[in-house]
Amino acid sequence: MTMKVAIVGPSLRSVGGQSVQADLLLRRWKGDVELETTFIPIDPALPRWLAWVERIRYLRTLVRAPFFLFTLWRGISGAEIVHVFSASYWSFLLGPAPAWLAARLRRKKSLINYRSGEASDHLRRSPAARAVLRRADGIVVPSQYLVDVFRKFDLAAKVVPNIVDLAQFSYRVRKPLRPWLVCTRMFEPYYQVDLVVRSFVEVSKAFPEARLCLVGSGSGEKEIRKIIAEFNLHNVEFAGAVPRGEIGRYYNQADIFVNGSRLDNMPVSIIEAFAAGTPVVTTAAEGIRYLVEHERTGLLCETWDWKALAENIIRVILDADLALRLAQNAYEQSLRYRWDVVRGQWLEVYRSVLPLETQNRQGAPYSLTTPKLT
Image (cartoon, rainbow, N blue to C red):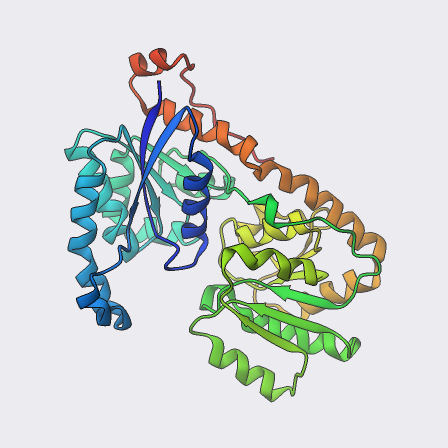
């Protein structure tokens, strides 16, 4: 018996971790005999006569709401399970909360797929979010870090990790390893790409031939360019926001992946670096500590510490054996995020929220086992 799941989440019109994961899920489930999916975008395209609204940040959110609610109500009618991608704060109230309520009114099972590194602060501040999450039929998160956060609020969550399209990435040994760096994070405050640039200043002093490729865009670009001008850096490339089908070549061209975020959950960019064989040097934002093991799958330093980040980059460049060991261990870990591994975990979670008689008709055992990442 085929399960019917409505996936509610951001579309690729707004490139980000959630939209990429939603798109990957939809593409992987297509044609699967065990699951039939429909997609309901939280950010539906507006009619042409309202296209001008897209340029006005808060107005477009307000205008888009009724289009989303109409599409949501109609779109979940044939589903058994409503799988809702969730961020935090106002985003939670604008997308996941209405989707949960619609599912409840339609008598559908609801799964909230919470993915924000801001979970601890969000849940502490929002009784409404806690109330919705407690009444959902299931909570799914991509990391053990978020399981631990939710437990502090007496909320049970299950882990299903992010998936990576490994077809886009080709593992290669960097030997010799060049001081060619890549960062694929958006230019937003939490990701602190400016910290990466400051660390690159020190790397450039040690290795004048060093290069840094910044793949992304965002509100912090002006500040980043200001730092580059201040230190007269010449080997920094702005690649812009790259379509997902092209992201693999930027990893392939680089020899080291660098990340400077101060708040993070389970960044797909790090898993992509694992798959591509680029040694990972990153700050140890709370969620990243669950993903990267210091001196085994990458090098960690404290958040905000650009000098320590630079020291770790230089260390990797100078120690070929360390670089190779980090890359090989990380590649082996990246295999946990293949679709053939994650697929079964999603099926288990979907079945766990269905009535027992439905599960029996599908010939699947009822299980509440949380998949392990470590």
